[in-house]
Amino acid sequence: MKKLEVREFLRLRLRMRLRLRPRSISANIAESYGRSHTADKINFLYYARGSITETRSHLEYGKRVGYIKKSDYDLLDTLLENIHLDLNKIIKTFKNKLYP
Image (tube, rainbow, N blue to C red; front, side, top):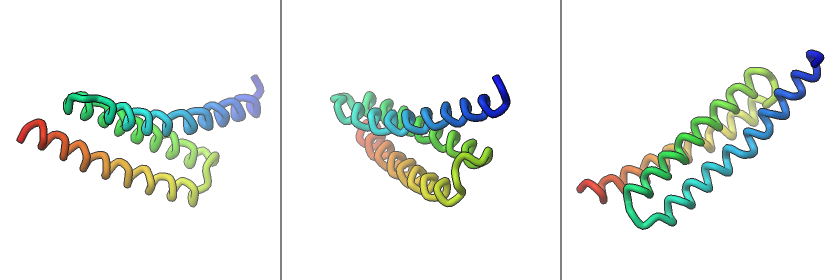
């Protein structure tokens, strides 16, 4: 592969990951609410939190290599950070319910 082709391949691969990872976040949150046991709910919220971290990592990489504009990165990273913080609050609430 030529250097340009490799760069385009990597750009498209990152783009695919950035489309799939956020779906995993919402899917795991939805899955947690479909669970009847609190411990299961918490586990799926942890999976969602892991997907947030992975998405942020992909965004950081995209910004570093110039695939993502800084302004877009800043907006998306802030939104993901807020979701991460909200998930932590929900997890804490469920843990308090599970272990009073």
